[in-house]
Structure formats: structure tokens, C-alpha cells
Image (cartoon, rainbow, N blue to C red; front, top):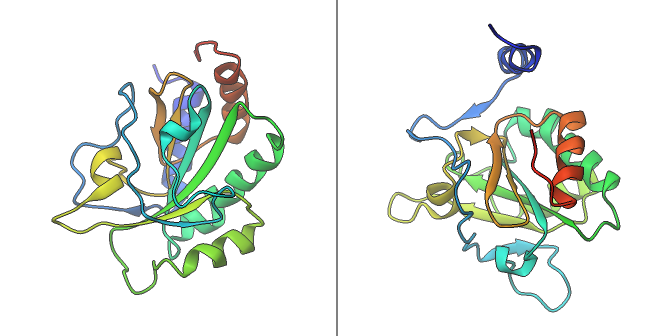
Length: 187
């Protein structure tokens, strides 16, 4: 029997466009240790930094939104959720938000110069990274295995991927973040 949460997710998936990547066979790495990001192109880094890495955020919850500039679902649905969550947790040093543009297609549109455009459009003052996925070097797309964009990855305080998926329900995310920040398990 399908619970209400599963029905809601299926309904949301059916109604909302998602920018899928057809060449990613195994989606996500939930339950695994979060690998390094290894991204060299960043915008809005903390003062004195030339890049960020997960090791910069030890004992913090890390929420990452993988997006593409041209992805309608990223622009219309998940970037606004990210904005709301960043505002909700402003000043809370137990959680960090990152946005990473994973250009696995649409290379002419999904360029590093779109990072400030997206940050400004949503009023986000968080680090934005850019990863170009090339067959010989899949980078963060190869290690995190997002199923396309938008794609959320939530990493707990111990560095384990607690959640990954296309949609983040804002209310449920807040409940989960509050537990993760407190060091409690999420049901």
C-alpha cells in the first residue's frame, strides 16, 4: 500500500518537468560517504577561499542543489525552495547550502557566467559552483550520480548522504534539517 508521502512524490513527479540525464544508470548515492566535490569554478565563496570542499564543513549538515541554468524545473521549483531554506536557516551555523550547476548538456547555455545571473535572480548569497561533465572527466556528476536536474543531496553531520532526489518538499526538509542539525536520526 502506498503512503501519502509516496503518492505526493509520484504526483509531483508527474506534474513537474524535470531535466533528465538519460546516460546516468545508477542514480544517487544515498547511504554512502559523500565524496569530495572537486569543483574548481566557484562564485560567491567565503572570504579568503578559492574553492570549497566538504572538509570545510565538518560536523555540519550540507544541502546541495544540482541545477542547470536552462532547466525549467530548477528555475521554477527547486531554486525558490533553496532560497526559502537559506532564508529559514540564515545565521544557523549547523547547516550550509551550496548550488552546483552540472552542465551535462546544453553547454552553450549552462556556462559559468550564468552563476551570478542565477544567484542574483534568487537573491542567494551562497557558494555557487560550476561543473562541466565530459566523458573523460565526469567530475561531481560521476561521483554523486544525480539523475538529472534539479537534484538535491543532503549530507548529515557525519558526512553520509542522507537524501538524494529530484524534489525536496520544503516542510519535510525543515523537519529533517532540524533533526540532522541536532544530531538526531531522520525517520
